[in-house]
Length: 148
Image 1 (cartoon, one colour):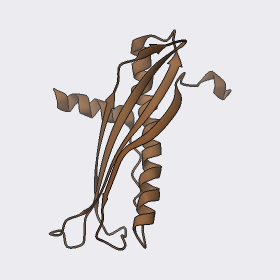
Image 2 (cartoon, one colour):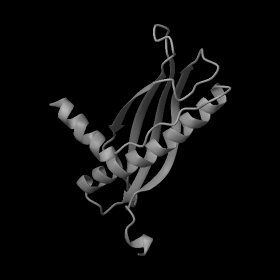
Image 3 (cartoon, rainbow, N blue to C red):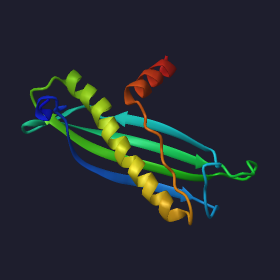
Image 4 (cartoon, rainbow, N blue to C red):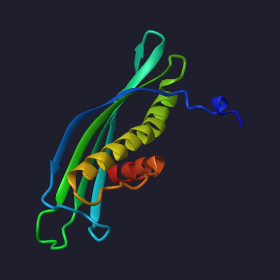
């Protein structure tokens, strides 16, 4: 299979961290520490710019690492990251939005996962946070169902 024949027609231009807040009191974490996380993605409308369409995603990820004594406040990692994406101008707005939300969302989530992993490994003397893989299509289905 030729990979260039199945590309998504979406390029990532850049990503940047808008904000990062870490509240940590633990020195180390293990697999015994339960973790909770939330994800929210907001998408801009497409903008026609010269010979391409551009769009942005804003992703908010919140991670809580619960202490063994669950009455104590959890450690939290709160990350807001933005990604800018482009596509050829001839792609319809509907197709562009699908690419932006699904492919762009998956790409930006992978970048956010790496940042959380790196930052948490520098935060703790032992252990780090590995966010689970997320099915972005399922994320949007569930979000659309909860909006109804």
